[in-house]
Structure formats: C-alpha cells, structure tokens
Image 1 (cartoon, rainbow, N blue to C red):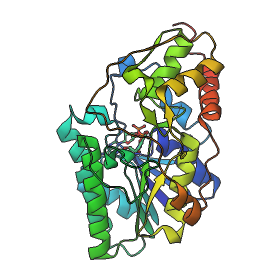
Image 2 (spheres, rainbow, N blue to C red):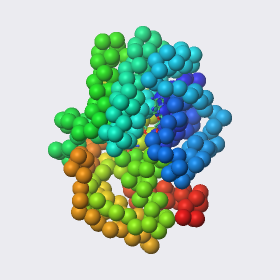
Image 3 (tube, protein in one colour):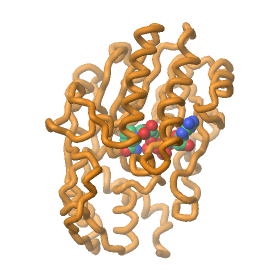
Image 4 (cartoon, rainbow, N blue to C red):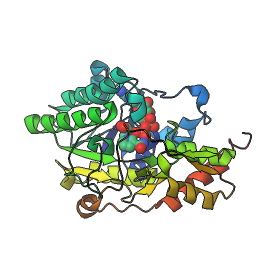
Amino acid sequence: METVLITGGAGLVGSWVARGLLEQGYKVIVYDNFAHYISPFHNRIKNYLDLRFEGIISKVTFERGDTTNISHTRRVINHHRPTYILHLGGMPVADLSNKHVEEAVESILIGTINVLEIIKDLEYIKKFVFVSSSMAYGDFTEIPCAENHQMRPKDIYGGSKYAGEIMTQTFARRFGIPISIVRPSAIYGPWDINRRVSQIFVENALLGKELRLDGGGKLVLDFTYVEDAAQGLILALLKPQAIGEVFNITFGRGYSLLEFAKILKDIEPSLIFRVVDDRDEHRPLRGALSIEKAKRMLGFSPCYPLERGLKLYVDAYKKLGILNNG
Ligand SMILES: NC(=O)c1ccc[n+]([C@@H]2O[C@H](COP(=O)([O-])OP(=O)(O)OC[C@H]3O[C@@H](n4cnc5c(N)ncnc54)[C@H](O)[C@@H]3O)[C@@H](O)[C@H]2O)c1
C-alpha cells in the first residue's frame, strides 16, 4: 500500500482528495495546521471537519503541523516516508492575502520551499504536486486561458503561488525532484468554510437573503465542483506522464455571476438578487480556462457543470438543515 501525504489535507479540497485516494487503496496522511481564515463565530458549519471526513476519519492519519516549521515537517515526512506528496497547505483566499501579507507569503511560498528542501534528496518520492491557482495568471488576455498564457499576478496570493511554481520548477531542475504543477479555479462544494462567493451565494439563497452581484454580475469564473477538482489533482499526482508538466484543472467553462445567480434561482425559486455596477478594479479579469492538456495527457474528465454541482451543494446544505433557523 503506497502512502500519500497531503499538506492542507483537512481542507475543502484535501478532504475530497483524501476520500478519492482511500477508494483507490492508498494510505493517506493529512498534514494540516487546522487554520481558520474567517472568525469561527461567522462560520455556520461548526462541525465541518466531521462532515468533510464523514465515514473515513478512522482511515486517515491526521498529523497536526505547519509547513512553515521545517523541522517538524521533516520529522513527519521522515516518519511516514510518503511516496507521493500533494501540497495544498497555504493561505487559500486571495482577498485575505492582501491584508495578511506575511502570513500569505510564509504559508504559500516558504512552506513550499521547506517541503521541497526536505524531499530533495529522498529517493522514495515518486511525485510532488504543487497546487497553484488560476490567480497566478492575473488578467486573462486570452480565453480560454491555456497553461502557456502570460503570468502577471495582481495580488499577493497569485504572486506567492507563481513564486511557489518557480521554486518548484527550480528544485526539480536542480535536484531532480519529480514534480507537477496544477492550477485550479473557483472550487465550490461541501464543505467550504472560507466564505468564497459560491458559499455566500448558496447560504444567502437558503436564508432568503438578497444576493448582491457586483460588477454588473459580469465577473466570469470557471466554477469547478470540488469532486472534479479532486479527480484532476489525483490524476496529476499519480500519472507518471504528468511529471514536469503544468495543468489547468477546472471545469473548463466560464459562468458569469449573473448566470450563477440564475442557475441558483432555478434551484431555489424564492431567491432574490440585485445587480450592482461597482467593480473592484484590483480583481483580475478572468474566465474559462483551457483543460485540453489535462484531458489529453491525464484523461481528466470533469462531470459537474454548474447546474449539477450547485444542486448537489444546495442539497447537502438542506440535508444538514443548519440554515433552517436563519
Ligand atoms: N478553493 C479554491 O477555489 C482554490 C482555487 C485554486 C487553488 N486553490 C488552492 O488549493 C489549496 C486548498 O484550498 P482549499 O479551498 O481546500 O482551502 P481550505 O482552507 O479549505 O484548505 C486549506 C488547508 O490548508 C491548511 N493549511 C494552511 N496553511 C498551512 C500550512 N502552512 N501548513 C499546514 N497546513 C496548512 C489549512 O488548515 C486548511 O485545512 C490551497 O493551496 C489553495 O490556494 C484553491
């Protein structure tokens, strides 16, 4: 049984990857500092860790730790001797990164360099995957945005991710580490607690609160259901042909916020939304990403268009029932 260590594995994406890897017979080590990015008082889903790992808690080995602490991270890696490392750990919210600059740079960039430094001489590592972001591109000047698009990040998060990519490539060239880089975008689904736009919209819809669509509702994102993202990450991790390559891992279609709201209204007809014209000029202009490379080289095949993924997300909330009392 081969071992996969997932940094940031207790998070939204990591928990789905952990589940997928267990199903494929891998031993899973979650290495996570259990961070909160918004105040726990503002989080409606208090038992999110139980929910994320429902039915698999006893099958996963949890190690609390922080990649910014190189000594501890080294001890954990040396102890478990993982064959594969999926590196998700790091501040995941672009807006927050511009306020918490040091935390963003340390967790995203220094944490990545630490793991690379630890594994550079470990012969048993078959693959290290750095999970970057579509925010590393900055404004999309071509849509769909392919992996060879220019890289001009516009915020600390995107800049730190891009720097992490460069260091991952550098360690790979200098020390021969087998690596891949993955750029996801706008992942949504159970159980995100970082209050990204999809979580806010779904919760407000179920609470009967009005949705506010900034920028005329024209902002376009490649919304990706978390199970599709996990499928792509697992392929990039395990497929030998992914070594040395960069992949966009998204659904591969852009939806405007207005389209998002209309799809949500089809699911929750009582939903009310208001379109507002002001736009945050600092936010990169984005849209669909090209996933042709991941389809061709990895056999990536996302199955959740927004209509389907949102329905699942709303149904999960309804089953939970926590929004019933407002
Ligand atoms: N969710 C998205 O839309 C999206 C899009 C592109 C890229 N990503 C990237 O995917 C990764 C996972 O994102 P997510 O949405 O699951 O976020 P999340 O907040 O749900 O999960 C991140 C996890 O990483 C842990 N963590 C953070 N810093 C750490 C550190 N230094 N050491 C150990 N653990 C640490 C946190 O405790 C958390 O459990 C992040 O790297 C994020 O930047 C996410």
